[in-house]
Length: 225
Image (cartoon, rainbow, N blue to C red):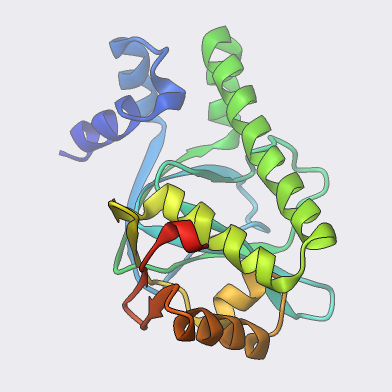
């Protein structure tokens, strides 16, 4: 049963669409499959056996730990994203972990060595993977640019727009987001204090731009963002 699930999870992902039926079946042999619950830690970057992970369901956060032990959210991973040692580089490993944000999270994973061998045998997959990683690096670059050139309010608006684009349920100009993030999470994502993030959300609610609760965020009119 798991092999069948793994096959369809991989087949549906745009990264593997260039592979044949037999190639995907071969990939299933080296693919790990796991379901995790909300708040469960599912990945540590300092593992002795580096892996690449593919998120098939749910959402997780990548938490970075600095030399003093302070934690901050590095990224939010959503359905279809890759995470782990995606650069295929282990010489300078980062100190981070992944934690489930939603009630059910489903991941597939590969040993980095197995994935490297697969890429060597499939040039089309190598090209797709290069593009995939390139887009992810571009996203980090844009996030850094936003931090430098935008104030906290603009970063909040940019974050909400990107969230709506990825996961929002939109009807006319109204958008609904399942809220799996705390206000402290949002503050870390937009690189500000929790107090500032709360203030910005309250101001937007007072102006009728959004309705905020622990379960969902409703953007009453996305044209007002």
